[in-house]
Image (cartoon, rainbow, N blue to C red; front, side):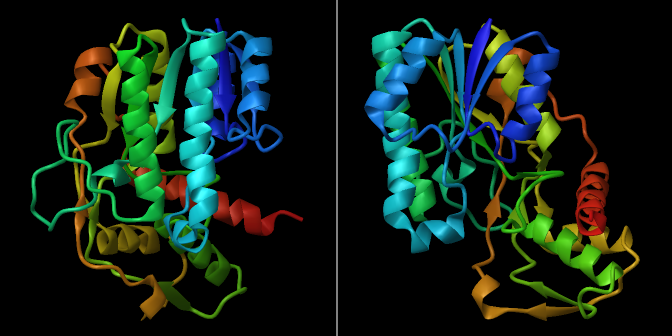
Length: 298
């Protein structure tokens, strides 16, 4: 089976592509050389590759950058999805599409609220989340026209290779820099009281592979652990695995309202049997180890 992966050089793509190749897929990896918002070019690539499946990872994935670059975020996240859906309709209507979105489409709730499931209303707040919600809804329209579109809503995930623009990866890099003597023993943080549902990137990859290979019906699927953890607790667990003992400095630009984003992945579990396997402490160790290696590299 042949699979086209857009955004293949991104964080998740660098874990997904080798896994698919090990599983015997014929992988066509595309990244920045393919402008997903350029509809004619994308259609030509789809026609040339004739994929049996597509995993659409290409995105402007930073919430912070989406406020500064709203037009670019719209172009990549929404117009890119639109171009791909139309290219598949015209050139590969039998292909299965994993349209990777975000749990950000749900917005957030106060701590202690029940987890989001796929019937929860979409209440996106940031430009990033709005473009992902728009692409998700458009995917549902194309599914109603007969395309096999699985709209994925992954919750927070981390692991080796994640950009320092994300909270846990930022904490891990700062700790590694302190250990290496490259930074004063001070760790910059934002709001530590919010609650998030974190997965290891390998568990997310496993979910995507099962949806590609199985007979799951078109529709929306949360990818989540169902367990919320306070950001401050995750930081404490990272520090416990580090040789650094930093003081914390709260920075105003990193502050966000206290909230909760936790998901119910029951639909994914029933469709594929998927369960997250990687213990969160192992994920944190892998993330810290990645930054230690990055900083020690010549």
